[in-house]
Image (cartoon, rainbow over all chains, first blue to last red; front, side, top):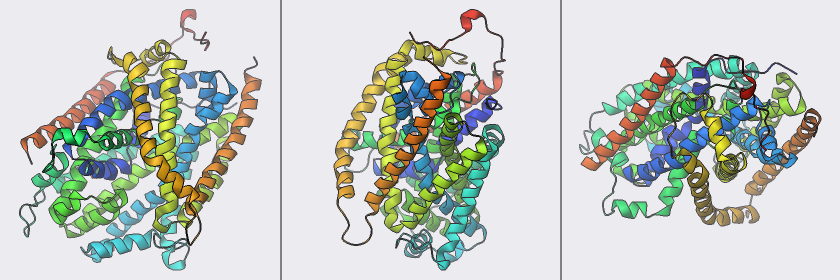
Length: 524
Length: 49
């Protein structure tokens, strides 16, 4: 068996987890959600979710990962098999492997958009598009092939495939280099660079003069849209009485902190047996929140407000619209816009690649550990699987249907399921006593007295309540989308679900083989 | 921007910046735990019963 791999330094492990957490959601999704749900009012459920679910669950996931690593497991199936004391446990843990892998299949596509935008700003191409929203939207929809399925597989649109190929090669190369020489080394460089880029863009946004044509469109008023707790005609209580704000805030915390994805679990298995997890998990969460609330919360909405006015901010477009249509329009109106546009999309690219790297590691760990194959063979198998998945998403690019369907089931449905399972397993199967012992092992900070109570009762109940509310609101409509065949064109939603089923079947076979190997290693 | 907006922005941003600075200080100031040999009582067999 190959020698166990560990993180080179504690800072390296923290930066890798922070890099995994900091992604497009921090800079695009968070400001859009906050502006949509009442600005400052959104921060209240957001902070509650951070304190009762995000931070405690992150600590639990770090602790569970190191617990598994100490017992020779680097994969979620191996850890859950041991935790649940049954071969079936490995199939439960399989969710934590499949989820990031399938998210990777479409995340890479979006990563390529960021790289393409950064390149276009660097070469001055984007600046020539001018400040017409319709022109930029047209450019975006053409670039990503959103008008027709297969649109990117034409010579005229093949440029996007080149950027996608570059992203694919970069991710594969870094993941092949391994934990220390690949992921850790890259994150040690990329994360500080990302923060520097964001601070420069933030400095530019905060020093923007008010719009001369509309003096009320100033940065301070833009910040007001982002942070004022109430909107005209609304009270704080009426905003908080809307269950959707709680749902959106909790979803944002999950998506943002990478809790419940199986990523932290896998990364933490590469810690040494007595490495601290308490301080490391809080630091990674704090780094993510700094990027999200401080940097993300002060760039997109205030800048859009100054140049485009309250109409755009009052009805913020979706994540893609804000990032790839609205903000380019803002940069195109800004002095030195090409430079700041490049910095912004380059930082988005860095945020995306540090996240996408982490999405492959859980599968690599399972293949290496379960099939007893080397890194080269594991990466080759994964390259084949992810290429097929990426091809599916890129081919069925019309209206982002495939991307949206995979995102819904993987980054929304399964994340709630797996986070809830992790929460229950940590507090009730491993036991809160042993769980807390695990968090305290090597801890370099004192833990709050309320933490065991929060982990045992508050987090699981909160998660179950939010999941029930989310399922009641979303599942019927999504189910209808699967079973209702479109009048024309291929049934992309149904095909996307078939793709998920195929990946589940493929990984079930790998887990079955891994179970047989583990049976031999751990004879009863 | 209303006074309440200023307060929320300063508290949220200040809180997270303060938390991050404190964490970085702790990480940098605390030396990484050295690996050491364990006594028999430290050895965890992995049994949960």
